[in-house]
Length: 247
Length: 278
Ligand SMILES: Nc1ncnc2c1ncn2[C@@H]1O[C@H](COP(=O)(O)OP(=O)(O)OP(=O)(O)O)[C@@H](O)[C@H]1O
Ligand SMILES: [Mg+2]
Image (cartoon, rainbow over all chains, first blue to last red):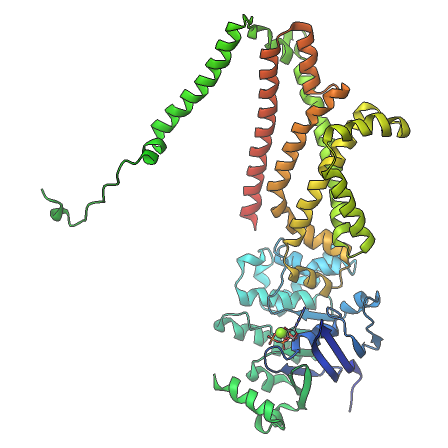
């Protein structure tokens, strides 16, 4: 029962100057699938998922998202980004806007929704991330965990078909990681297609359909979590798991 | 009673250094007054020696007078109004032009950068007075600019150069992540500027922009050379009628000073308001 492919990456290369950040990366993400990407620092995880919404442009290979090919600088990228939500490590909330305005600015300015409708959607998603009472505050008045949940709600307000997460919990104090992961688990429960870069292996075990392990710009291993955690094929993945499961 | 009884060690006695003495409040205030008094007295004594005939009592009527019809503003107030209008319009235009130049420089277009840099270099290397003559005597007849608009354009074009640098710095001061977050929700570059980047730049902008507005107000005095009826021109006119050059120049200087101080304090208050909100 294979579902429709949403993200299809074929043989992607990406260079920063002379440095090759991605080499020959191929990956297909299907509708409703949850893919967790892990790997050592500098292995190209962020670069890969940033390619998926055009924040980075690939130098070679082919990348299609929802059947639309991402050509660097093509005007279609903007259209596409509305369907691909992104959550950043550093939250990147808009500090000059209240929480509610953070959520409504995209729908109002990009999707041209009327204010009342945008606010209704915003409140729905604030409920979904369990902070309806913070609507009137400014981001700087919230804890890190609350800010990241607002960032998730902001992405959801665009009603995306895929959500990308780039280490959403690694800038958080340990006691706040759980509340963000809970929201992400609930989101997975709604059938959202998700690509998550994270080192939270508990989360990966719980929600991932597939684990992707990267090193030095390559995808070294793709496996279902049960197999990946118990018997990783590559020696490198094994070493990596030993290291991060140690602490 | 000895110190040991109180259980507290004595504060160490700081020596009375020269700096400490000079900075003690009463000494500082007294010194300040002495210096100001010395300057005033020296000018007054100098004027006295020249046989200058002080006529301060003549000055108030140039601010305005009370008649049966109520308060009638005098020439200085009209001049002040003209200076405020001239500076205000020039500043608005300078901000618009400066923003355009800043965006061109940040656009990543080779042509845009070249135009912006060429403009900056040109303006930086032409004296303001020559620029004014260019606008009034050369571009004026060509484009039908009167002295008022020639002045506004000169001031705007001159100050837009520095303003564009201020804007560029303020735009660059906004974190890169803000651009990414704006793009990630599908905003275009223009939308990101309008809704995300520029509003956040304001807080980096206010102090240097105030400084630039004050500089513009001061340089607006230069348009008196083409007889635009602003504060400095009015001063000159009054003097040519009355020969009270000392009183009038002190007065005109005072009016500029008050105008710029009011502006600075106003903006500081605004800044504090903005700071408490975020
Ligand atoms: N804009 C850039 N310019 C130059 N080099 C870059 C740039 N972005 C990333 N790189 C390099 O590309 C490599 C991959 O970076 P990437 O951020 O994708 O790694 P990562 O797997 O996400 O690592 P981390 O776990 O530290 O976030 C790194 O060596 C990084 O230094
Ligand atoms: Mg990364």
